Length: 154
Image (cartoon, rainbow, N blue to C red; front, side, top):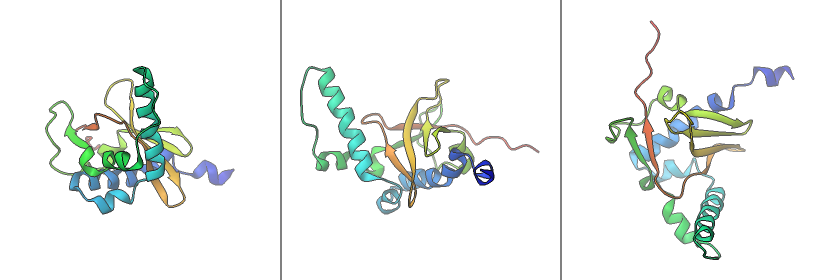
């Protein structure tokens, strides 16, 4: 139990992987991007969202193919912007900027949230055997607002 008490909070543990994922998005680097995905979990998440939208509109469908879902999963699907300005970020978010956007969902899952007071989850990461991986994302509107660099204490 002592070891568990000394363990990092999940969002602190996941911060480096989430920052590296966002750096891969910003650079448009598909190989680095892929290193932080659990593609089967993302497909399942997106498929359920698409089926839910169809059913909400009175359609009963089997769901999109893996090929169609894979076209939704890539660095080009994400847009990183400056908070308030909606201008593209000049570079990848810093670890401090990413840390400000992370919250713990449970011991093995964190989310990158938006900047609203409700902190709506945008991306969900899970701790897996090889490290933290993206397992959930919205099927539409993948704009992520990143706040200014937090001020450091003197």
